[in-house]
Image (cartoon, rainbow, N blue to C red; front, side, top):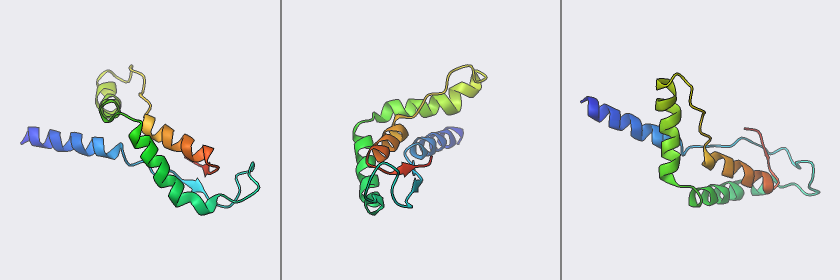
Amino acid sequence: MKKTMLIVGVVCTLLSACAYKPIIDSNGRSGTFDKSKSENITNDKMLCKKLAKDNTNFFVESYKVVQNWYLRPSTLWLMPKAEYTNEKLIRNCLLNRGHSVIN
């Protein structure tokens, strides 16, 4: 029973790492563009998520989740926090496409 609960917990944790939803300010221009880029938000989100998924390793990202949520607390947070590559790639892709990403 405990083993099943542990497996379910680990799987849920791993799946939650893939659920990055960026908040984009779609009020119009982001300052450097003459034309509004807000009409391409949905298309750009899908393309950036696909690019990030294609350029990240699932096992490395899963290890980062395990490190941040299980290994760091067991060492009293002496280990440095591992940054998630997937979120960073999506954020940079949207910024370079002219969107103002808040988070």
